[in-house]
Each structure stands twice: as structure tokens, then as C-alpha cells.
Length: 168
Image (cartoon, rainbow, N blue to C red; front, side, top):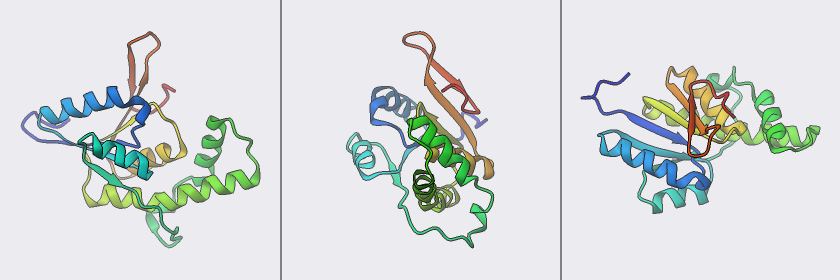
């Protein structure tokens, strides 16, 4: 755990616009206590929205997958693609699986690059359980970065927090 005198970097991965009031307050509270915060976004609209609200953002520019990138050798892309399609309620056809896996491969190196550029103290994943979120969790854990999942609690107005992402 970071000491109170040490400023931490907290990266919220693909924070949904649908959860803006909660995440905005959380990021602002962390910032007011001396921590640096950043939203790591996977699409332009999300990035522009969070920037317009005054939050620091980084953008994972999708790019061609490089099979020689050793950081990506252990990533279970096929498993994450299956989970993503299942959570979206989509049929798991070969074409759909290839498409989901291809999208994840395009953003993987960018996520690793972001974590390599400046290692966050904490990666925060809220409510969403997409393949990209699983990929960010995997990359963070590979880099030894703490991960915290949060989501709606069982009762109205409550939140559930866990470190392994099983609340959703």
C-alpha cells in the first residue's frame, strides 16, 4: 500500500460513461488527496467525454498485432474472446470469435505499452466485464500492478469491491 506521503497513480480502465457520476467523484476525491488519476480509454468518444470533464486520459491506439512481442505470448486471447461474446449474449460462431480475438490482439500491445511507460500503482476496473477489461487485468497482473474491481452492490446505493473481478 502506498504511504500517505507518496502520491500514487490510479488508472481507471475504460470507465463507462454510464457510470460517470460515481467514477467522476471517485477520481476527483483521489486527486484531491494528492493522487494522480487517469482514464485509459479504448475508443475516441469515451476519451473525449472524460477529457471534456477535466480528467487526464490516455488512449490505447489499436494497431497491428505483432506475434514476436514476447509480452503477448501468454495472453489467452481466445478465452477472453469467448467470455466477451458470452457476456454480450452473442452466438459464439467461428467468425464472431475471430473478430473478437482480433480486436483484443490490436489493443493488447497498447495496454502493455501504457503500463510500461509509467507503472500505475493501481488499475481500477468498474462494472464492465469485457474482453478488453480482462486483458487489462491480465496485463496489470503480469506487470505486478495491483488491480481493483468494483461494481454495483447487492442493495440499492451500495458498491461491491474485490481484487479478482468476480462481483459481476
